Image (tube, rainbow, N blue to C red):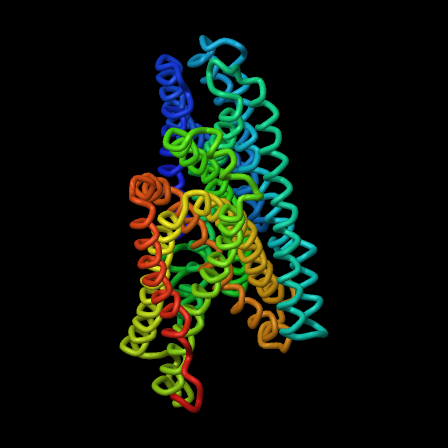
Length: 532
């Protein structure tokens, strides 16, 4: 649900960023109209190509694997991603040639090439993610090997290493593709948009290109929860223990079930699902960050109109202390947010386990907990998830208002820092979690070592990885987008206030935000033995 919601949100935010930018940075009304129509048609075309690619890939996969008794579940998903990428790139050049060739100066192929950089990122990043999280990955196998001798400690360290390395390679890939887009944007004529604006427009189009893979990115991400729940439903059903079930299935459905084989297929399919769940997160966070650059430039354009280009240029210099302080502040907020999200998980898990130990006793011969007890566990987890979400959102909301009112140059530095720190933190946490998850899966499927000390060690790593990959990393995406989009509105209001009034409001908003920051940690802290 989370990445899917992020995907739809990213569509909206990127569209707003590009439309705002075109209206602010393109002086000629006729060019504005041409570009806006082009953006709209391209977005519709991307959805159509994704649907067509999904259909074609389904036919191919059925023909190739329909009669196979065993195959790699990652292959059809990988093929879908690359097929969609290729079809989207072809469609981009065709539609651009038809719609904006009249702009002259090769604008149609230049803008198509810039979008292609983003489309390629949507295909390359999943390949990099697989290199760090797939069950076939050397990094995942290293996590397993480390766990054999070092137990849970080395399991966790090896997963952290995988996450750090993945952030390095994905960061360089995004930089390379954005750099290519910048190089092409140099050729955009000055009469279309200013030379300082063209690279930022290019970065926005890179995010737009990312979204050319959006429907397929969401589809392969959704594959993960489906396979995960399918395996869980099978295990919870305990179908193989039902007397006479094999004969009943044979009679009703015409085949004799092989429960061991079914269990293995579900486990392996879940491993593929884990991998492709992990691929969606860096793609979506990448679109958020690249799109944020366009929104930030839109804020700069607003400031140019209010204070003049030269004053804004000096204000955004690295030697301006306010701008530099904003860069430092953004990093602090990202690390607070990561900790607060994990704190909500830790406290909720503690309360759930506490309830289970006190109220659920399977030693008495019961095979599973009662429905009422199960509902109570779900209620506890939901309660702490909502409590954590409430505190975190209001802290981010009031922090954004506070920093926007404090100083506009400080705030732009803050937004840049939020985007950069958030990008690497999200990639690190998502891929470290994916490596831990599939290390456990590898032990269960390939080594068939469930119930061993090795499996216990990998379960610990997977437990650490869940709040990393499923809570903190995915939630950084909407934080970046909300802060930049809401920040555009907040700055426009703040610069109209009297400076003294703005600073008073900044202090008030900041103090309110610290209340919710305090609540997100100390208000949700697990009680110690002395105070319990």
